[in-house]
Image 1: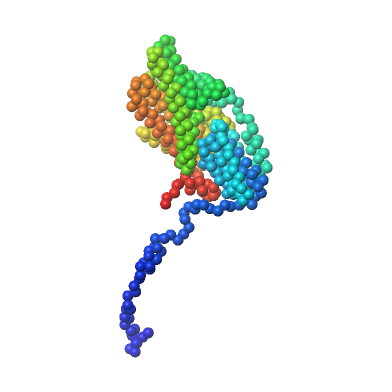
Image 2 (image 1 turned 90 degrees about the vertical axis):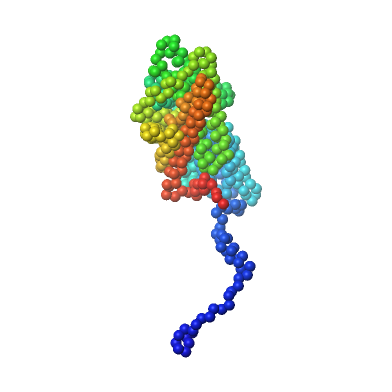
Length: 483
């Protein structure tokens, strides 16, 4: 209000406002207290699907059998969980709780009438990639509402009961061709490739016989590596007795080829993907299995090396790296290795050329980095990262499951020669420290391969325009939580 001279009257400050202790506490709470919902919720209410008891039981049975088929044919736990959730949602069942351990699957559904819980114990895990691809296609059709429950049940029965795409002798021949490719990849000539192929064929048929006899897989691995080392021992004996040229038949390359074939069947990539995806229990189980079966290989090599040394025929490692082939030859050999392992794993024939190309690209990246004097583990990680990226992009177009492309693609880079070198250093020269160093290097290469393909697949999946809610939930689980 203006005064009589038209000016603004002078304002006098009033008495100071005093804030009591309660007011201070209230303001402090408003400053530090969050107002939004929690980042992660726990103890959510049960959701009802609206299906009848009989319908939910049939859906639960289908989802559980699908998970068993995926896990048994070689899929990782994260992929199996995601597929089961998508299939259940596609059939209208919500709120199912899925728990997968190393060898069992549990699915539970809470209902007003009482919970339904089903458990399946997995007896066998193998590499059956054609069946794996068929089951994943079924999951996609159900999730996209292109297949109803009755049709899905009929298709699953047909998939699990279908014969393999190849006869067993084709698998043996493919493993032999794979070993020949590994021998050329490591620097051997056609003579070494032929002997490696025949040796691997003998190993495969022997292990098949032992498997039918019920011998545990650990001892099968030991027997396989012992056969490869025994053949190398005979080659070295022939150098002294028959005058063979050791440069034409390097014994250690035969051993390394057999070891790579034995290592190729292990779930190293699956164990790493389970750990990265937030499934530490199953990752620990798979990792222990990989370590135990690798130990079987080590024992088989070590026993035959010791026997050879006592008989006066000690194997040597002088031929390691002596005949490094040109990069172009290594790329072609790697393509043969990857394609052959794909056939041995019952991959669809139309997928085999794609797998071979990815394996060749991975070795090409590894070879280029080797020319740049990059270390073995770093080379393996970078090459497998490229393999994982390519596999993730191609799998997004439904060309083939990403796991099939990655597992077969990194096979040429498995550290079979390093494992043999470690055993030679320990048994033949008695240098435990040097052998332990080589063992750590081999393990580092294996971990780098698994981590690279897992990261590459994750990056490829993250570039999708929009992931479904189940994929988003899996990514939240993989990134962990911070309070």
